[in-house]
Image (cartoon, rainbow, N blue to C red; front, side, top):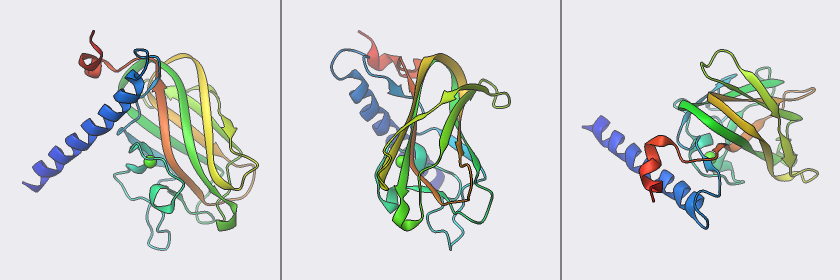
Length: 203
Ligand SMILES: [Ca+2]
């Protein structure tokens, strides 16, 4: 009974999020805006993200915070990795889009930065894609908007020619040090509405 209720609630929440995303995509000229196909999808990380108790900003599995459609520069809307405990020079964050998409043209990462709290921006984020989750092809390096501000959200973005993938990986890197790392949202942008939602865009 509980499982069924949770499933129904998840479906309802997912439907609402998709409705909001579609509403934005369909506003103005039809399908002019890209749509975030990572919304509500699952993701994994290496090193994994965990709530250790002492690191209350962590997020135990199942992970949801990076794809829940909420992006906000606030402790309650971010999660990530505690610095100084595990090697954080190269974090691999991989989102599973659930199926192959052939028209991926962009990706974004919202990174929470608060130097006064020991949470700096990273040095670089690279994007790659894969059809099988094993072999990844590099797509490019993201550009960042935000610096030199030190108490703000950094927006990392990549755009390019259409790519085909089910898995999209963000490699978040530092030249040195193992600082705290906090993100609020990741997005993968496709040019068209996924097939399973095409009924919404008919006519
Ligand atoms: Ca979020």
